[in-house]
Length: 281
Image (cartoon, rainbow, N blue to C red; front, top):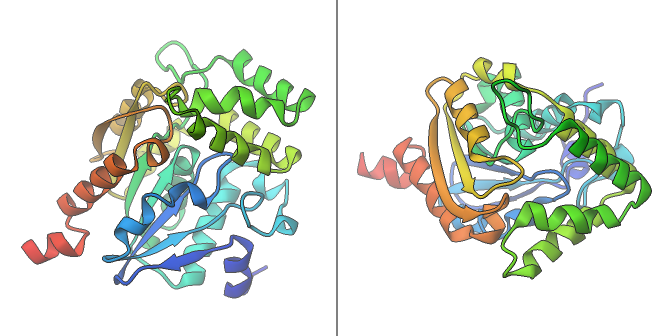
């Protein structure tokens, strides 16, 4: 069933700001919402129409629209991305996806190449579980099963366990506290299913299908998506570029937004996407 554009934009609580002609879409990761981009997105409003949204079940999205069948795979979230872009009437979108949203964005780009001009993947992982020999995703199968078991037994306590590991930056505990609060804001059943879909998905074979120009931003000391994963993504996506951030942890847009802004802007200029780069050409 085709949905009206207004229904889609309300469903995903889509916000649009900025004055540019090109579109720049920011997508959040597991357990987060669009507020996580609040330090980064405004820096691009002079040159782009900036889009932020919440996946169904997160933030201020329409919780009544949550369908466990649709969102039982990352393809359901990719459908959200496609529908949001279509509802806006946008094309040639630069998609910036954090963590699992990096994979969501590449899945969407494979299905609808016409919608995307570039992908910027921030700490992406196509597979979080070690698949030996040859691939170290950062977690053993037992680690993820243990997390899901903890989510069943302690619907709020798991967030206090996971947030500091994801955020790092122990000298700034307020960052981990914000992420923990974001985790706890999701309904327990939604959080658990999103966690299962995120951490048990294996999209390594999809990387070679990506035809959209892609840039990988990799953090330092990232326990969730280690450097080896980011370099694997870079190697598998033909023609992609790679940049190592000095920011520590898995959420550079929160822990070091200025470096994240510089890295995104540098890529956009090098790719001649930004108006500034076009003016210099």
